[in-house]
Image (cartoon, rainbow, N blue to C red):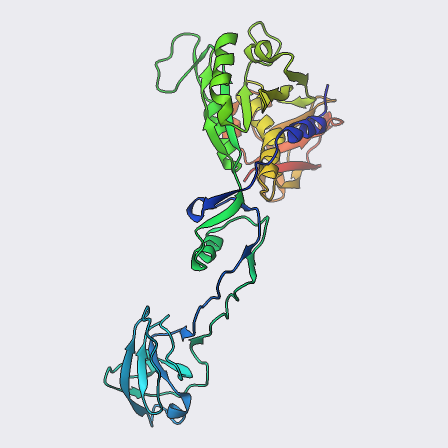
Length: 395
């Protein structure tokens, strides 16, 4: 059997980054910058007021106190957005709003709270020092400086900065586009009345959500029967929309293994030394990488976590490609099949972990409420309560 680490390398080798593209800044959230962003202008672009108040020459109010206020005539009103910048002279004040351009010759701003707020002759009760409550041009960003770096994830704050600099597009590593294809004649869509022997399709819904949670896009998520011709036609119809194809089901040793029957000779089907998720496949179909996962829901999602999620995130340049690995104290005795790496559902609470539910691959309920995968390596057949074990933190 192939080891888990060997199969991780195979999958990672199939999933490659897409060429960088320019996207509108409104579409860039969560993507990774493909090049540095250099500021085309300074921020602020001009000296402006940091407060609602009055622009003054500081010497004019040097003696102002509560007991001996200074009164100055107000000769200009400067709202934010005013484009004709006035010049202030000695012995007067200009009423000014936050963000409005500072008058030529003004040295400071008096907050409105330190005045009587008048619009004709203002009474000022405090003195100020040069530069007080003034935002100087370029004090945040200097034109020509690098403000965002290649490899950085685009956050809301980064978008705010890009917009403030007047940028309309960013050069980014695009999301991977993933086709999720579930197989099985027994599958019907949720909402459809169940006939005997039928089950509701859940893998495509689950894996499509896992793809989005990993930061990629789902191109489409159809389901198909165990008919080889129908499966091949579905692949032909949708494969061109995707950078990666993920299938579930049809890869075991039964009589109706549609994925194996359709792709033998193109995809390498192997047994991986793990539980759950032993039957796996990987290859390329018509130029598109394809990863074939087992059909049991826990096997499918655990396989996605172990093999596909880290490779997807790495191809998109996203940080933390692997789930955080921690060690925790086991609170119960466990057994594991020697020679296989076991991934059990677990609940991590502080520094302790407990196995959650049976290890079988169809017990989806327990995985839905687990917050970690408890990993027991290939050489472990027994783990005792109190032992330190490794967990994959899914939170």
